[in-house]
Amino acid sequence: MAIAVTFDERPHTLGDLMVVTGQFTISGGVATDDIDVGAFMSEILGATVSATDATSVSLQHVNGTTVVSPRMSSVNKSGHFMVFGKR
Image (cartoon, rainbow, N blue to C red; front, side):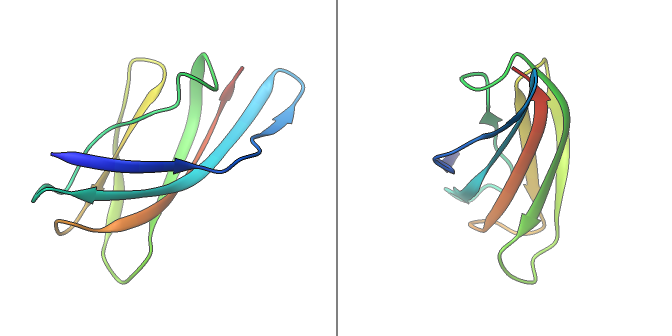
C-alpha cells in the first residue's frame, strides 16, 4: 500500500481558514490510502476528491482531524484533492 502526494506550493488562506489542494497517486495494488494535511491545518471542515480519468473516486472518511482517505474504484490510479479547514 502506497500513496504519492504532491501538495500545491501555495495553500489559500482566508482569516483562520485554509484550503489545501494537490494531486495523489495510489499504487501497490490497493484502491485507498490516507492523505495527511496535518502540516497545514489543525482541523478538517470539508474535503473533496476527483479522478484524473473516468475512474470513480469517493472520499472514504475523515480520520481524526487531519487525514482524508480517497477511495478509487480500481487500483493504481491518480486524482486531485481539495481540503478546507482551520489553520
